[in-house]
Image 1 (cartoon, rainbow, N blue to C red):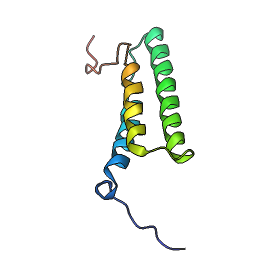
Image 2: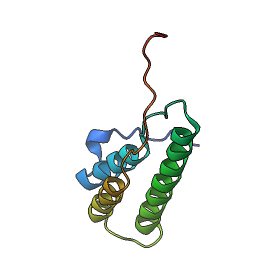
Image 3: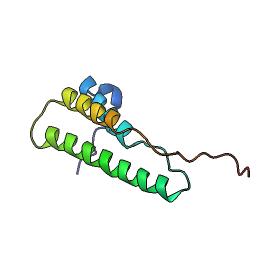
Image 4: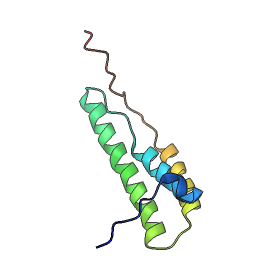
Length: 95
């Protein structure tokens, strides 16, 4: 078995990097505040964004869509579903 050749981000085409960043940004949401409402909103948002990321990746991997436009579409979808809950803030344990 051969050792895989390492691939660095800088060696990838710009469109591939754009898609990786779009997926990362879609899934990188802040932790919710302490209320049940915030926790439920966080869960719904993460589920929605994960579904959109999966659909985007499937269109590229399974249907051969172009990577750059797919990344831009995911960014539009992400912008349409902003964080609408109170994020958790680490205040160092202050009361």
